[in-house]
Every structure is written in C-alpha cells, then in structure tokens.
Image (tube, rainbow, N blue to C red; front, side, top):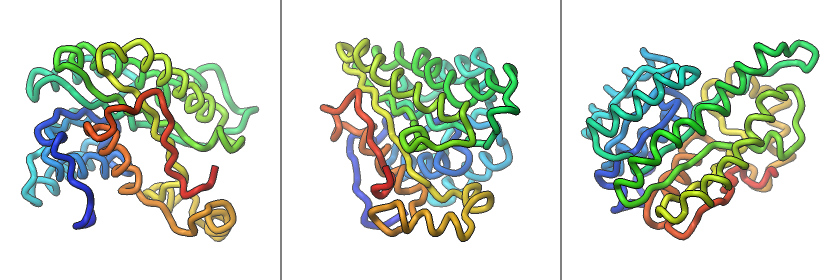
Length: 256
C-alpha cells in the first residue's frame, strides 16, 4: 500500500464484510480496509492463505480481521457467517461481493450441472449476501453494497459464457437493489475491473499476447493491480460517496 493513499475517517471502526478475501483482489481489499481502521470480516474457501493474511495484517499493527471459512455455494453457511459477523463485530455497514472464478470453458463442453455451478460461484451468492446483510444495514441507519462485475461481457469476450452471463446479471441486481433500499440509505454500486494482474492472472494468462493486448486496448499503458480496485472500493464504502448509487464504476485504464 502506498504511503500517500487517501484516508477516510468514516471507515474507522466501520464493520465491513468481504467475500473471497483470502487472495487476489479480495486480499488487497481486506488489507486496505484494515489499514483504514475498519472492523473487517472476510470469507474464503482457501483456509491456509486466509489465515496467513490475518497474521500479516496483525504484524503490521492493524486489528486482526475475522476470517471465517466458507464455501459460498452453500447459502445457509453464508447466512451464518453474515449473522456471526453482526454478533461479533457489530452491524455490517459495508458489504463487498468480490468472490468469483473466471475459469475458461467452451460452449460445447458446458453441461447443465456445470452451468448451475458457475452461477453459484459467480452470481448467486452476491444476491444472498446482500439479502442477509441488508437488515443489519437498516439497523445501523444505512450502508454500502459493492458488487463486482467485469468488462468481459461489455467487450463481447468469448471463451467463458457462464462467467460473462453471471457478470452481466450482477448489473441488474445492483440497480434493482439500489431502487428497493435507497429509502433505507443503503447504496448499491458495481465495481467493474479490467484486467487486474493478480498472481493467478499472471500465472495463467499474462504471456506475450496478453502484454500486447494491454498496450493495444488500454488508454493508459500501465498494468493494473489489486490495489487499483481496492482504492475504488474504499471510496464506495466511505461516506465520501454518499450520493452515488445504482452505478457502474469501471476501473480498466480505458479498455472498455
């Protein structure tokens, strides 16, 4: 994290719940919220990575985030973790629906079971996490839900139709929930990342062709990394963005 990053006083002691917080973009989001003094809970399926993250944050002198192991395909388990967070940390004021998996798949190979499982991983939990957190936000007098989309469907990318279908649908969830819960001072927005170079992305897809695509497609000729997304999420969770809801915030260096 940069030493000159913005500070958000409203995030101090704010209860934040992050899905998929153990690695990649989610890991950076958890780190950034902890550095702001927020009270953070996160869920992930990767126990070892997540526990290591908790220890790293504690060694930096920040409050230890609450890690809860959870497979987000299990909606009842997700509901339990949201309720536990409220009991142990206080009412959730910011929900960050980050978790997803962009594994590639060919149209001809997709079965009904695979399609359903991909939507469970990439779409379904975002709605049910919001459903579970909204009563806590009402109790607290308002909140911010940050859903995660993708530029993949905007750019008409092929090669993973269940993923692009899921990510397109998230924009509909965001706008519908923003309308339903605006009177309760609950804001709902979508962060839309471009190609963010997590360790996984670098390992799987950043080859010579990928390097060329960045230079050809982005207006800004710089690589994007998880902190670039985390900083946008901080702003959307803070009171500084209190007039923003039902919107897409694209962070892709001008690719789309």
